[in-house]
Image (cartoon, rainbow, N blue to C red; front, side, top):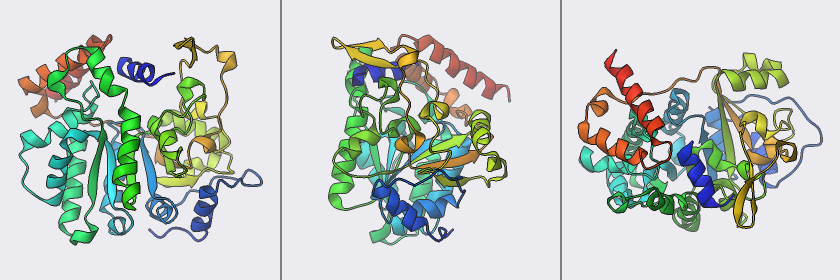
Amino acid sequence: MNKRTRFATVVALGVAPIGLAAQLGHLSNGGQAPSLSRAVPIDPIGAILEAFRTHPLVELGEAAHLGDQDQAFRLALVRDLRFSAAVNDIVVERGNARYQDVMDRFIRGEEVPADTLKHVWQDTTGLTFEFDAPPTEEFFHAIRTVNAALPIARKLRVVLGDPPIEWETVRTLADVLKWGDQRDPHAADVIRREVLAKGRKALVIYGSGHFQRKNQRANYENAEWLGGLVERDGTRMFSIWPAAGARITEELRKRQPDVSSWAVPSLVLLRGTTLGAVDFEIYSPSDVRFTVEGGRPAPVPREQWRPMRMEDQFDALLYLGPALTYARLSPALCADARYMEMRISRMLLAPDGQTNVDRLKQACASRRQQ
């Protein structure tokens, strides 16, 4: 599936344990475990910090853009006193690169008006409202607070990964797709330029699907998502798939019953384990796959769907528990007529825009009823 088809589809739809360093080094060398073993839960923050010893980039996927469990873990991670000693940058999906200077000034502690700062996340290429919810701003404020206590040499930088779309020039869906086509390639270029070329290390936070090494929608025929694009030049990212909610918990328990006793959150390394051998389709069910015929996408019959071991897509699984709850828009934003007009007009550019408009109105109505 080409980039435009893929984006159009999205629019329409503690101390690490002894031995962990050796395991991570084994991953970076592409080693294979001799036999399957039981996945062992370990402290996730310690494991992530240890991963930075052998990898310049750690990808932390989101189970859901509005997931409360995702947000709680992100905040705990960046607030850990060890984090800024291991990491220089945090690359985020929920930020328009056009406003990188605004973010740099804000993260440094300068005064930035709220009406200026909000463009960072409200003006991304995404048409829907998930990034507008309070967790986005809360996360940026948390990093600003962390930086306030750090010396200049250790201050964190937030790198905005979404293309610099200029909404004042957008009139049609085609205008959006022009920018949307660039989402993953642009993020990969930003990471190469702002992180790797400068010898820095970064935590990369995106929706988990962006970190696939092979494109599930394209029946694994290409590597057009961010994870695959970054690794084309030999850079190895340590990629983490988040697992939260009842469905995925039950799937994990079927294959390893002791998941019920795991601490929440926990991280497990996947290479050579029963959970790593599971088909990625179990972790992320898909409804359709495409191949390219004559320059156009064509559906792949289900009987021709290729399998892909989870351990070949991701290095680790972050277990966030059987609960998956969602943040909601603030009442103040729902009552902001200018915001509602902006967001609705953008959503209506997509073929299924009215569905998302109805979802926005329902979300705001539920807030007013409280």
